[in-house]
Image (cartoon, rainbow, N blue to C red; front, side, top):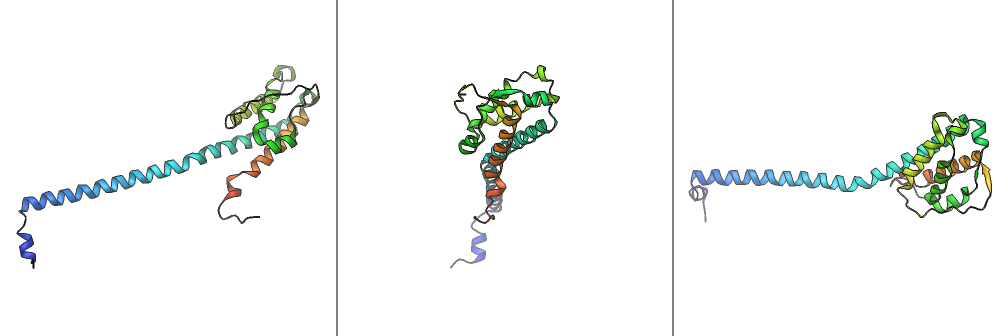
Length: 180
């Protein structure tokens, strides 16, 4: 049986120092690796939520800008006729794929003709373009010749954006939310 006094005589004092240093640096390396993997874990699992948050921020901007334009826009602009290709019901069914149609219609409005405050229709069109980057589609407008007031298009866009925003908002799908 080995006694403590025999174990102490197995190594020289210099060898004990080397063993202690080796143990110290191994522990330090393990801590560093653990810290590295914890950061990697955080980066991997938070990356998708940033995109999700950005999408909902853009939806919120669409809702706000459409509402501002409806409430504060000049009557001449709101009464102007635009192609009636954006359909609220179809948008609710297809989701944001139809937002490209609204983007195309709004980008075609002559801003100088109506002297819009802060170019809100241009802002809505730009935000729709950013949002549509998350949902690439082959956007085809079927020109059937029907027209509607810009007011009706903005109301439909506002309602559809609200439905999509409330349907997939991250808070609504939180794990503690009871199933309906």
